[in-house]
Amino acid sequence: MSQEWIYTTVFLAWLAGAAAFVIGLHQMNSPATARNGNRLSATGMTVAVLTTLFYLLTREGGLRVEALAIIVIGFLLGGGAGLYMARVVKMTAMPQLVSLFNAVGGGAAAIVAIDDYLRVVGTPDETLSTAIFVVLGVVIGCITFTGSLVASGKLQGLSITPSKPVLIPGGRLVTLVLALVALGGLVALVAAAGGAIDLDKTTQTAILGLVILAGLVFGITMVLPIGGADMPVVVSLLNSFTGTAAAMAGFVINNPVLIIAGALVGASGGILTKLMADAMNRSIVNIIAGGFGGGEGTVGAVAGATQVRELGVDDAAIQLAYASSVIVVPGYGLAVAQAQHAVRELAELLEERGVDVKYAIHPVAGRMPGHMNVLLAEANVPYPQLREMEDINPEFERCDVALVVGANDVTNPAARRPGSPVSGMPILDVDRAKSIVVIKRSMGRGYAGIDNELYGNPKTGMLFADAKQGLTDLVSAVKAL
Image 1 (cartoon, helix red, strand yellow):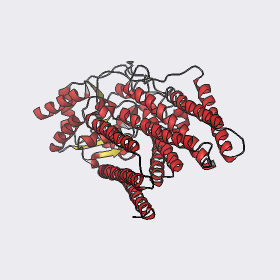
Image 2 (cartoon, one colour):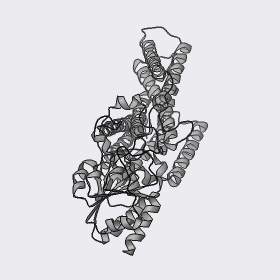
Image 3 (cartoon, one colour):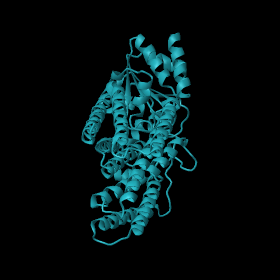
Image 4 (cartoon, one colour):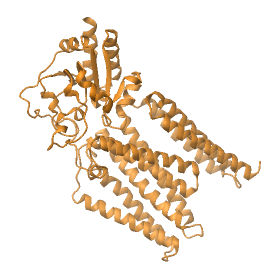
């Protein structure tokens, strides 16, 4: 087979892989088809990777033995690590894992761009477009790498990266200076590649090193001041950065499938980031400015409440069992307790008694985009029962019981009045239900760091328990009725 036919075959396979990405991404629009979309996208990536390996083996000169060995070892290490983490990671750790994957993707894209630039710098292959894409890929990739590591640490609650905002003295000024350094490096390298200024290879390499350092530090100073309440948006934004960095790397090495895959991830991540920011009624710039969210666990009195009404398991079970409609509101507490199977069991038990059960999903509930959808899908909760905020809010007024499991900020009525840190944030209208049952371990605040006024509502009964234990007790109590 001639080299021309080999490249044509490879290009068509790349095109097929890219088509699988597009179709798979489209299928991810619906929970009912999301798994198939994920499988199709993974198949497309497998085709793209194996086709690229075939092309490297069959092109003129082929691959040296040591290069092939490195590739095989990379396959085994990366594939083995991915398979291991996919099997053992808990649903509560999924946001951290997504952030780590973002870091790996951004770092890999930056390394590809750096390697190609070091290969062409000072040679006739150093073109204007190469310099632009290299520096953009390096900057975005480095920011994604360190920013995602910090975000993962915040989600994990590591002491070195606490979930609350970490305000560095003069941090915003440092971030601005780093941005100017990166921009100056971009201008200098592009100008050198275009012949506008004369820089030798050593100087260009040093400037690239300065840009790399600026990007790495920028990622840290950008994410550290951002509070835990904003982490879902940050994860989505960094995911968009990862895709953009990959697309830049695709331009650098002239690989169309990498360009397409990166552009899809970058665009979809950007759209999701905007949607989630809108769901919090905050601009992306405001979120990146940081300082919102004091971390979970702080205990305080409920503003404006003279008394919080505690509810027993039997009383809560009677309300649920004899209701005609129940809306379950899941939150991060459900994920922490790994209680998704218990809530599904309770819902099925209520449905056997003729109760209409639905789940209210807030866009930023949990610690990553779609966290509650993924959690409940893992427990095989029927997709039609998962209702988005805009669809479910009108139904709360007709609902007999709203069962809140571990959700805090997304149910806080304080968002409807000015003067609160969550003012203007769209919330689930839980307080408009006829009766409210809240399963919560304590009166601890959510990541926004403020009290939830819902808990002082006369219609609210607090069932203090771990989400899994509380739901299990409710199941037993309903069966006993």
